[in-house]
Length: 282
Image 1 (cartoon, rainbow, N blue to C red):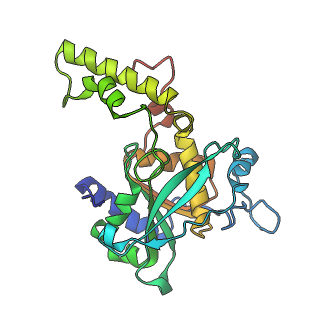
Image 2: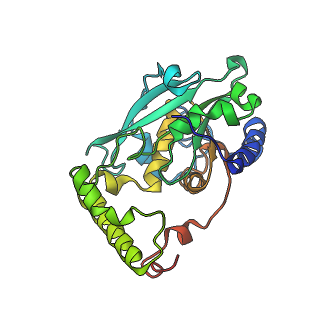
Image 3: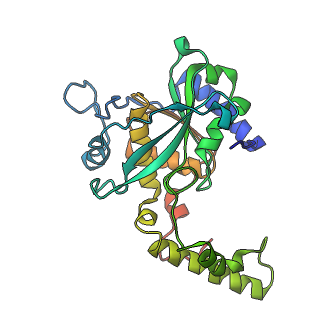
């Protein structure tokens, strides 16, 4: 479960330490721990989250991760848990998917500010593994004042995994063209593209319905429900690489529900996602 953070990640963490302790950058008015925005009855502020978006997440009951000690597996003081979240936030009664979490409790509970959520990027990197490594790369000042929580985005890692093939043999047969470090010849390139196409088709058919519910927006909605499960009125978040995109999407969906976001790169999400017109543009 252990992973070694890159020097790039360690440098970005210095920014996180500043944001986490001062809360003067990218701050907002936030949402209540029950998931009700400030615009709801009984709250004096104003939540700019759209009514449609608020309805998607606020109607989901606050989940209980049922935290259990997993220090031995993580190699550090840690608690593990899982929550069941809607497969489709537009249709929450059509099933759930299980999301795995790992928490490193604050070392100074009396000075605790809240929870710092982590995402290592990928897409598909394990936030559980990253949180398990938190004592190795986050400053003591941050570890003292925050519970550090990592979660594996839906469909990957320790969460309920997407299954794109009927069995291991079918997967091996379909992905044989990808078993090279990097395609360099025309033959290798053709085989690689054939396997890539097979992977896409398999995940969009056999992998459904989970594959259709693994968008960044759905993960951002998961993050808002997890914020509520942690008891935080506003989100504190540290994201690397693709985790930057996740942070940007969260900020746009829930502009008054985050306290501080630290991300190591800012990209144009529309350009990153692409369109049919630009599908051939790297």
